[in-house]
Image 1: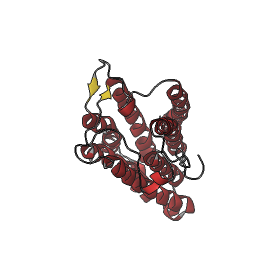
Image 2: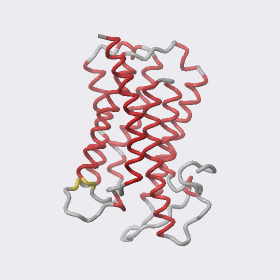
Image 3: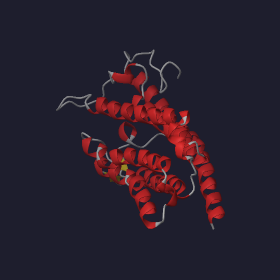
Image 4: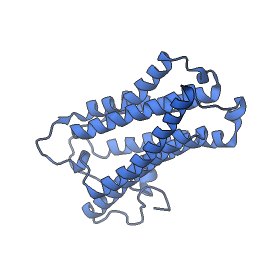
Length: 255
């Protein structure tokens, strides 16, 4: 059974790569339906805080369930435990902390919420099952340059993501409405500093784990967030005449 499931996990990783590329194409051809882009139509919507908390929660709950319900032999080794902890720390922040810091926030269309919820189940299972049952690392992997650089990138990316979200939350003073140009942090260089942080985070996770499953997640993240960042960048350029033209889309000094 083990070779069969290992093959299935690899197949799921390749499928995730394909979904990322397909999702990027689809997002380019249709308007996003969240936040500032959501139309005021009659479609059923989920309150912002509830949507973010519930849609991200499977990426925390599924891995905990996978590990609790199986022997999780590989988690006896430090590299596997650290890598899984990296994944869980991010989603603990995204599902248990981030949603409750949101100020206002527009309700999310139900289908957008459902798609995000399903992806988090998918990816939570893929990453946790692989790390808990099949990922094989030497005991000294935690001193390997790939792990050390990857871990540092993961930590830096998470801090950038959290700091950038803080800037976005505090753009408006109490009682103010409307949109403003983000200032401070990496927003001085790119339009989507929060997305840049998340891309760096998962690229670091992928490097530290050196696996197909981690690489697939990083590729999926980049494909989706880069496309969204392009949409944000164009929106700011059209909305604000004084928007800094030197700012890149998502990667400082590149694009």
